[in-house]
Amino acid sequence: MPKMKTKSAVKKRFKVTASGKLKAGVANKRHGMSKRPQKMKRQARGTFVLFEGDERIVKTFMPYAR
Image 1 (cartoon, one colour):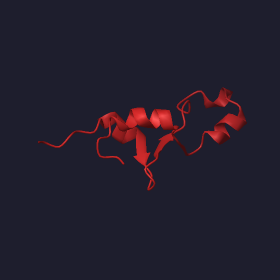
Image 2 (spheres, rainbow, N blue to C red; image 1 turned 90 degrees about the vertical axis):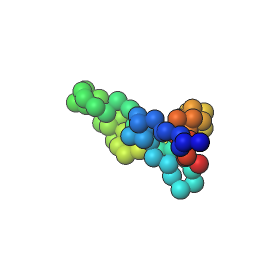
Image 3 (cartoon, rainbow, N blue to C red; image 1 turned 120 degrees about the vertical axis):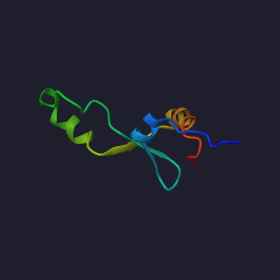
Image 4 (cartoon, rainbow, N blue to C red; image 1 turned 180 degrees about the horizontal axis):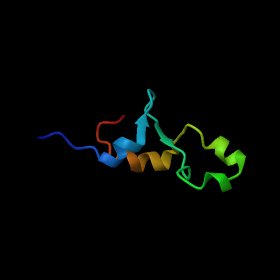
């Protein structure tokens, strides 16, 4: 059988950690940041680990992620 393909959008948006969890960027950071509170901008830096329910959904599009 041929290899299964990973969704291109998932490849770009998520990374798998060494323990098999998924990391993603925080939402709502693209534009209009001047009107957002400083606390929100600070907390939206970097990445976060997905919740289990969301992780299960995303991993269906990543056949080789563990």
